[in-house]
Image (cartoon, rainbow, N blue to C red; front, side, top):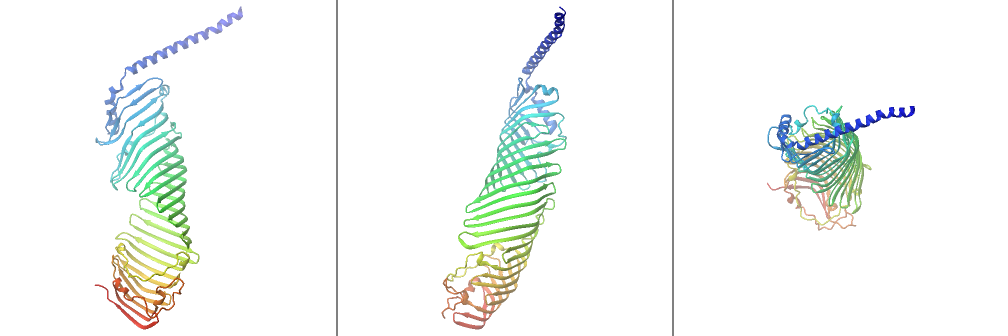
Length: 563
């Protein structure tokens, strides 16, 4: 009996708790039913004007809700918006519109000031982004103020379909369009990484670019110290750039951005362009990249480039640090080093292997630049420095020196053909070009010719190109004097030359196996009247002139070009 009494004593509280639970569940169910009735009787469309007024007070923009707002109650609170649009700030010009927005909210987290949203669907989003000529934009106001959330949030995902973004730069009148935009994300939560995939068509009018773009990455936005981190970034492009077919792939394992700028330890890119018979393939590795509002710095840019033109192939590898200063518009390549190889498959004897070094600086704001370079292939050397200015037209100052080049190694052997009527070279494309520089060449072989030395100062005022102080030792001839040519479609030449000896038989038509300097018959086929086709004027004095089996001494040729 005592045992049975004890069991009854224990079971009474359990029974009370059981019925209490039933009562609470009933009350909760009744509350939910009451809330459901209230929500079902509640028409959110009656509050459209209040929503429109709130949007105007907060943004100064007009919000239009053209569709019906629909609510669902169970198992989640759902909202289905119809068509909606947002105007520019302070006027009625359209800024953005959307065909449909759907989202749902979980009930219980709301009681804890937590916002848990199901997948958000945006269909037919269209936005018009403008950067005005003064640098201001039509969207900066949307990001003003404190953007830090006062509650935690979680969204199951975001899906955007059939969307379009249009960006216009009024200063340059350039436009960039993203059409057929689709975006899909994984779960979005405060200070947690989210997977993102995007697919869209990119059109840039100024660059003549039309491309399909695919983007995949994992994004982390940290709200405490606003920053964005992109991991496992992959971006691919296939389309057209101008008339060329474009294929590009960019990847980076880690890219971070914050209020101070952007940084990436390593970015890799493969870019190819093809427009028959031309094709360019490039591979880039950019290490130590940092960028902010003032500068972009790349610790080292490592590149492989190949260019194909039919049977011709040019390959190159180089590396260099790169520095860009935005306010001053300065670009600097402090030390570019590389190798190159050129070959023509149609000409087995034609080819080139070389090493090169280069430093360069350019100021695009003032249109100036300078470069120093060294180019070597075997014993061949090419050295120089160039200064460029475009303040009052293209102007170059330079010093160029080349020596010990056997061109037979790199080029096909020259083929002598029958002499034809001379045709002046069209130099009109050089009109306006200003030059001031020194040119020095030494020991240049191109069988059957031998250039021993060439020195001259080249000057151009944009109308006339002059070679002053010309000293040329070609084959057995030494030439001194000055030459000038007008930069026209049919240029006029003015010469003042002294030649010690000139054997024209070296430059006569000859069979392939006949020595170039073999004497010809007394009847020479060299036309001394050719200079008249070049509209040449001036004087040529020759100490000894050989033509065929004739030898003339102290020859003076006076040229009278057309006025």
